[in-house]
Amino acid sequence: MANLAYIVVIAAGAYTYGILTLGPDTGNGGFQQYVLGYRLPFFVAVIAAAVAGAVVGVLIGVTGLKRIRQDYQAMVMLVISIMAATVIGAAPSFLGGEPGLSLIPNPFANLSPATGDWAYVAMVAFACVVGYLVMRRFTSGPMGRALRAMRDDEHAAAAMGFSIVKMRLLTQAVGGAFGGVSGALLVAFIGGWSPGAWAYVETLALLTAVIVGGMGNDFGVSLGTFVIAVLLLQGVQFLPQIRSHTGLTEAIGWMTLGILTIAFLWLRPQGVFRERRPRYGQPAVGNAGGGEVAEGHG
Amino acid sequence: MPGAGRARPRLIYKEALVHLLVQSIGFGVAAGAVLALGAVGFTLQFGISNVLNISYGSLMSVGAFLGLFMLGLGLNIWLVMVIGGLAVGACSVVLNRGLITPLVRKGMAPFGLVIVTVSAGIVLEYVIVAVAGPATQTYGNRSGATLNFLGWTLTTAQVVIFAITVVLMLGLHLLLTRTQLGRAMRATSANRTLARSCGIATSRISDIAWFMSGTFCGMAGIALAITIESFDFTLGSIFLIPMIAAAVLGGVGQPYGAMIGGMVVGIVSSVSSAYWDPAYQSVVAFGIIIVMLLVRPRGLFGSATATRKLLA
Image 1 (tube, rainbow over the protein chains, first blue to last red):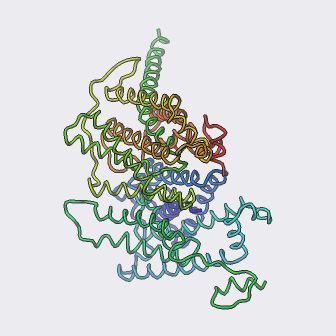
Image 2: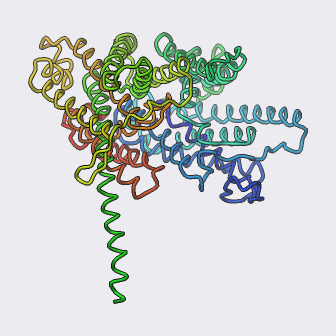
Image 3: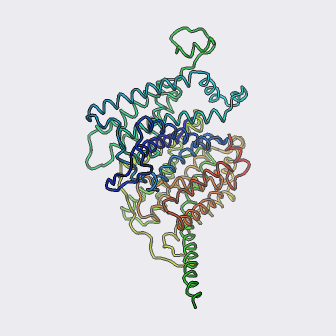
């Protein structure tokens, strides 16, 4: 089931990256707090963000271990994500409070703006490819089969000797690490981060991406994210601005997002791309994913 | 005497602390009345239709903005509260009939329904933005004269809202215990299938529950807008957390639990914000939710039925 507090993990990565790279207080107007004052290199900070994301992910996962109804659990996750933003926003001395952190350095700051932007795009694309490959190994290997079994029937998976608690927390940790890295990459590019950037509506955007793309299909989710993030949330900016209605274009974007989610759940819950079920124990014929079928022989 | 000089200010300090406590309990009761109103609506609908309606908060904002519109027409504030409540009740029935019931019939999992109600809530919120704009709004000063009793200083508006809540809660109690409809509602809440096989029109009961829930929701939204100085379209979704805390504390699906839960959450968060940073006020509600769900998910007053319903 989807983790509705996932945005908290992304935020954790973003804040970690921020406070580890901001450097000591240079008296820059004195408008923001510098918590640690480290100026760590980019990759160290990204790894730290991944670790922070994993830790926060596991902490959130612990609240999900109690055997309560799915929808009840979903509600708890939503509450966690709203509360995390509220608490961080209320404490200006810790992570910048409501105004948040700013002036977070860009790793390509010494290049010219245009080159730097493209270098960043290339790096993020590279990170996506690496992430996709790591995720593929994770979901197609023995671990992936165990996870699929757990998702489809926990009791059966437990009877096969898998530790459900350990696997759930491991999934949270891996998911959290991915979220942390994505937060770090995001914040290093936009240079600032505040609770407003991770309000709970942002979770809906992620969720819509997953639902539209197709749950359980990595490719579908990637495509869904692209469509949602790029076309919908950025695209509405190109709608003609209506002077008398401030915020109307943004409202249209969010309304479309909400309606899209409901429409997909209603009419095509499996998403645009359905999950390809790996066929175990069958000869490798056709164009099924190589890795998965090769496992079948083993 | 050197000793007396030191003792005197300490006594004043202690008196001030006690006064602060009494005063913050008074505020807590006033806030708890609004909370209880909202939480009872939330829990009533969940108890009977078994769907967690996250769009409840947004419906509350809809109520507040409908109230703003009607105040602009020059209607009396308490009349606005009643009409706004009924209008949100109607919206709530439309939401149930048009969206929730068809999806439940399709066999959608509870988790999917949560996502649907979250999405519906966001759509509703941004409908408000599209119509009324994202700006902060206010009802103006509606608090009326200040009243003093029992050491509490409250506004007339707070007292009237408290009275309205008490009357509505009493009315709900009589409805649930003394009428045929109330018995049908309790039966549907306890066991829907059994209730249906006893000849109760459960889908109609469900409609009535959504209507009552929406009415409470709209009235709570307008009451909230009266008591706080300013609000925007996120009014309800922010208020949803203490409401959920109240409902969870009392046991989700338990109207009486939600009444008491609302009062407890109201008083506890008011007292804590008097002695602690008010910015952390909602942390108390958050703590209550997490602790209750981890320790006693069925709530303080939850029955065995509630436990069966909540544990997976």
